Length: 156
Image 1 (cartoon, rainbow, N blue to C red):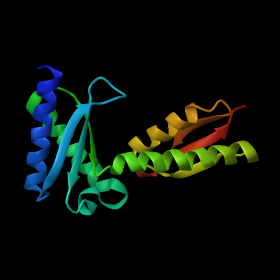
Image 2 (cartoon, one colour):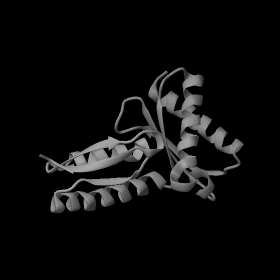
Image 3 (cartoon, one colour):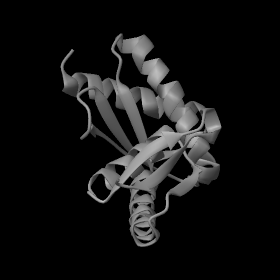
């Protein structure tokens, strides 16, 4: 199955799932992801997105996970599904980039490591990418499960 047909099928499955969850989809699009070959970004606009996104995006992550399992089961292909509801992911990405930039400056200024709050793997990945662009600091993830977080350290 080519990417165009695959993406159309994934978008259709997404809209059906959200309909069953009683969310009215106003707009929807799907495109191949930027970061990985087998990644698909699904952008949606829904009425009352708060309950779909949930606290700190937890409901969104869960819905994304269920959708990924459905996709794997229906089209027999391992595709990483990224769900962006009402531009939440885009805004979240910009907030994280801004926060991490300030903490990089703090780390450089003080010469001391800075630990960030616990984050999802998606959020940690964004942080690591921002930190990798600066040659004066390094990052690593520490902790297990829900306690996993990013630590920014000065480069030795």
